[in-house]
Length: 528
Image (cartoon, rainbow, N blue to C red):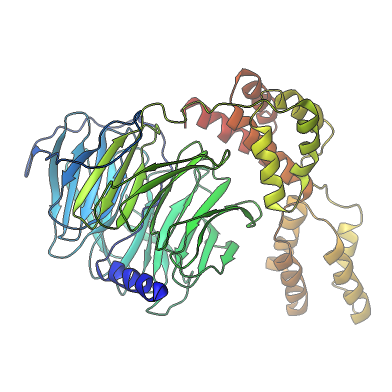
C-alpha cells in the first residue's frame, strides 16, 4: 500500500510537470543587475499566518500565497530574489528585502524547473510540450523560447559559465544549449527512453567540468559537461526524484521515494559515503553550500535539517499542510525556501544556524589513526575519517607532514609504453599477455589519458575493444589521488588561516590536484 501511495505521488508529480529542486553552481553576486520591482503584477507579498513550530533561534516563516501548487523555488546568486514557478503557469520573482512580488510570465499550463544563471543575468524555466524559456533580467524580457524535447521538458540547470543551459526531458535525453548563440551544442541519450523514465533532475558541479542527472530509470549518472561522456553510474534504490552536488562538488546526494534512506556518494569514486534514514516519499532535497548539512522536505510538510558531519538533526514542523515538493537554500546559507502542494511558499531565516560548527577536539592519537583511512577505496571508511579530521585544526599540520611524502598520482609505469606497444603484435598470445598485464597495473590519470588516446587513434578493432574493456574497469582513481582530493576537502572544511596557507601551497602546482586546490580557495573567498 505504501509503495502504491508513493507511486501515485510520483505520477501526479510528473503530470503537474513538476521538478525536484537542483542546486546550481553560483558565482557570488558579481555583475548582478539591480532589478527594479516595476511592471505587471507588482504587489505586496501576502504573508499568511503560520502554525509552524521552528526552533527558537529561527525566525517565523514568511509565507507567500501563490494560488496554485508550487513546482519550483530557486534563489538568485546574490540571494536578493526568489524565483517561483507554479502549476497555474505563473513565474514569480519575490524580492526578499523589499517583500514585494511580481509576475514576469504567465503560461496556459504548468511551469517548473526555474533556474538562475550564476552571473545573475538570466533566469530559465521549462513549460509544456518540451519547451524552455530564457528570460533576461537586465532587459526585463524573454530572449529565447525553444523546443528542447519531443515530450515534456522535466529538468534544467545552468553551467557555471552562465552561457550553457542543460535540459532534460521525459524522452530520457539531455541536451546542452548556448543561450547567446541560440543553438544546440550537444545531445545525448543519457537515460532510458521509456515514457515511465523521465529525467527528474540535473545539476552542474561548481568546477563546471561535470554534471549529474537523476531519472526514474533508477540511476544517477555523472557525465563530462563538454563531451557528455559518462564517468559514473549510480544505480539501484528505486526511481530517483532528485539529485544535487555539494557546493565543492565532492559529494552528491539523491532522493528516491521508494528508498528508506537518503544516500550520499563520493563523486570521485561513485561509492556510497553515508546513508541517513528518510521519511517515506521524499521528493525535495538541497545541500547547504558548505556541504555540512542537508535539507529534506517530507510529505507531511516538515523540513528536516541534518548535519552530515555530526549527525545532528533539527526539524521545522508543520511548515506546510501538504507535501513539500521543492526546497532551496540561499547561497549564503542563511535562508531556506520551500514550495508545497498547499499552494504556498515558505521562507525561513536560519540566522547563524551551523555558521561555525562546534568542534569537539579529538586526541592526536585519534587523528593519527584516521589519516591512513584517507587512502581507502571504501568511501564510507574514508568519510568516517573525514568527519573526525574536520573537527580539529590540529589536522592541518598532520596533513602537511603526510602530504610531503605522498605522490599526487601514480606515475606512468616504466613498462607501460612497452606493454602498450605489444598490443599491436602479430602474435595473439603476445597481445593477450599484454592485455592481462595492463589490466593488473595501477594507472594514474596520465596513463589513462594515454590509453583513451590509443583507443581513438588505433585502426585495429581488436586493440580498441581490448583497451575499452580495460578503461571501462578503471572506475576508481588511484589511492594517492584519493588521498589528495580528500585532504583538500578537509582543509576547505576547516578553512582557518593555516588551512588556507596549505591550500595556497598546493594550488601552485599546475596539475589536477593544484586546480582542485584553486577551486577550494575560490569557494572560501566567496564564503560558500
